Length: 119
Image (cartoon, rainbow, N blue to C red; front, side, top):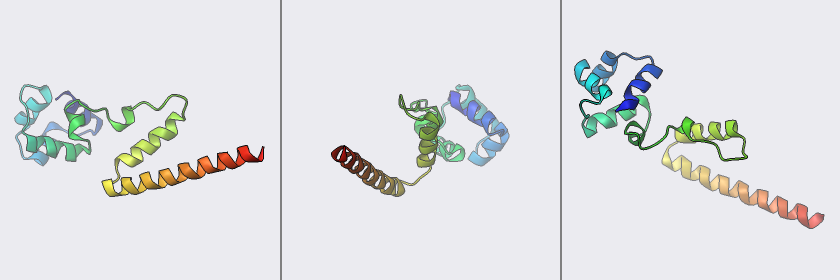
């Protein structure tokens, strides 16, 4: 799992500290990081919780939120900020946010229609 070392270094944590948090030996964790041993599903879940990433990210199936490119022609910094904030929300709050975004979009479209009508 090549992303483990990257995450560990990014968070400035020793292999021993992570191994202790996971309840495995430092050697076992070192094997996970080197890719010479695959962690169990339970350990993968614990690692995802520990580093606050998805299991798909750990397995290399998903880019980290900050790595997702902004849409062409948009304000990349603002989009990245929004993605980062949304990433940490619970699913129920994300649904509320989606409803609110749809409401705001409808208002924006209505305002555009009114401007066109006045012109």
